[in-house]
Length: 243
Image (cartoon, rainbow, N blue to C red; front, side, top):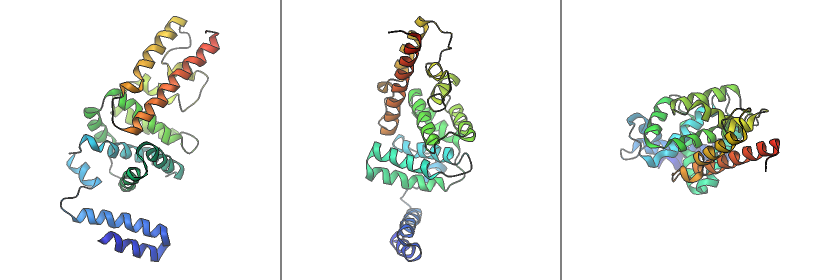
């Protein structure tokens, strides 16, 4: 098979790293040449991706965010890999990451088209957690740049996410004096009763049980989001001297 020949040539030129690159490139060529094999490119061309390929859509959006500021950060790439290893296990994560490498080399990925498919096949709660994950990637190199925020905001629009929900998630990654209030989607002038009502609403909206997905990465994101909602409520309680 071509992938093994490419791996040998790669090793001769660049050592171990060259062998890995050669193997991945050879695998792609092998798949491309076999009529029965699906590639990441044919999936998007035909737009006949099954719900089981959710990770493919997720990683496509990841690549758009990573490239948003004109640089490809190794920390952001590592974040994606570590996250998926923790969520899926090493073997499955490696397979997913190979797809990610293929996607990252393709410049014609359409966020609008991907999101249109996701809108049809995922619940609103899942799309909220997807945004949470994308912000996590953007922050992996230490800060969230304005181009990354703009790209995630664009994706949020395609995913039909409400502006206040987007700002609530963004507040978890971009700190400001009234972050806790933004997370709970209320104004700082809200009464204590309005605070309690907002917390119940947000806790219900972001409870992991409402995500209802088999995707482990999104489930983990839901748990993190739920904890942030609880933390925001507790911070405001302390600020106001409430028990």
